[in-house]
Length: 610
Image 1 (tube, rainbow, N blue to C red):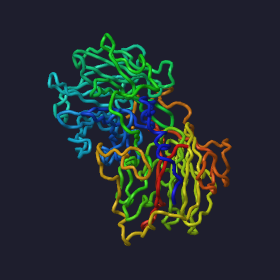
Image 2: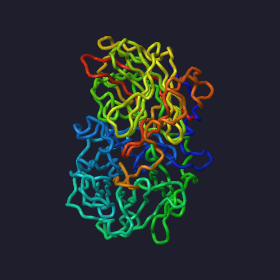
Image 3: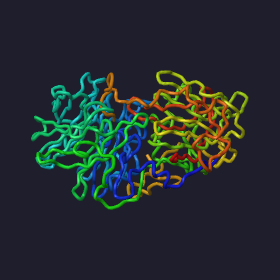
Image 4: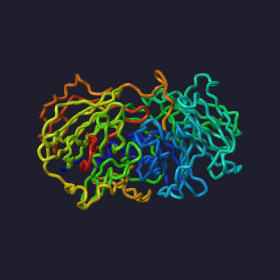
């Protein structure tokens, strides 16, 4: 089954901030690349972001102009301790990592609020990366950042505190650290107590630098959706520090512009990357110009307010690029943009001779709540109005086996196929509101000939989702031979090997070998909780977009769409997780029982501008 396509330029247009005339428009990364940090090595720029409880974690993005980015790999294959991440943990795991280059190696430090501060390192961004090493154990230790001071030869570590585990927040803690980055050398001291700064709350996300004879800490405060970016400086690492607000919303439409990293280009320009919380789409990444005022303080954006459009950095021109979203799953392999919702198990995906993603229908007693099962393969929901399409064939004959395409968040909805007790495949559309522990029907199921369909979700700019399908007997993937007849269903599959930044191909049709989240402030009651209105809370029963049995073509499908496409169910408003934007996911599962439950095959996943 072959989803209808769009010209490569159409796909790139919704995902890159490069305007093609020497300027760029924010966001430069229009998806949930939460809590970004950036480092330059030579002419290459590398970025990482929070990944929470998804695996692989610690995404690695590459650019040569700070505007056009591609995803080149991950630094964390599996989360540790592994036993803590056998199921989804969307509010745990990797929080606000820091990326540095020191002594010929890349280093990433992060805080896990339930275990402590970890680090991994590698001689190359391509890897191999070391196993996670626990630098400091403890509860509520988040947003860690190291500094190797070239002037003194000393090494330092700063981190914030999560009140939910540590009992206190709004403080930054500093340590002397061993030069090899393996341990802290003291009990730690409070560098900044923001309870003593009038008007400041939820201070965290520190990034530590040395510049102009000062120790600098760039740290956000004020809440995820409403906060600001602060800067602190002191002549000594242990203080005393003075502070200043260096970036805030002002009169712009960029709410909460904060938490990110400063980088200096090879030509001496300074730039700052940060996020903006944007409802169901999560934390979108913005690029701000940066300069220094007469008193030696950084000035971000346009006099301290964020810019939407600006000239690009003075760097060599690069082709438009963005992290991959499309995937044809060659040989059953999935691209780097995909992550499991927990550490993966053996045999969840298997390689084979043809194209198409073959997922095992994993047996589970939690099939009625996809938020709780680990075998959902996800990628970030891109911002903007888009249409998502994927072909599906259900090869399982096990009653109750199902597979589909899901928009996953605190509330979720999916469309796909389910094997009925009489052996027929039925088109199924189900949803679960936030705060519930099981899903229910969003539309009456209906038989589908041929066990295969083209699934489609139209998503508006404010993340309202309209589900439709087209029965299609034309299937690209090879039929599943089943266990014991060729491909070993337990052989496993995963991303293609990491080619590194030199292999960036940029956007384009077909399988893109480029592929691939810490939080900002600790949530609290009221506006400090961080997520703004407009992300919805589930299905909208008052929507006028078709009925359960509608058969008309969905509005907006445009030329080339299948005229027989049927809209199903009312409109669904996507929601974020606690700190994570909504996800697009593929899944296959079956009720508990004996024996192998078979597989489902997905083909040609595409996201196009609506």
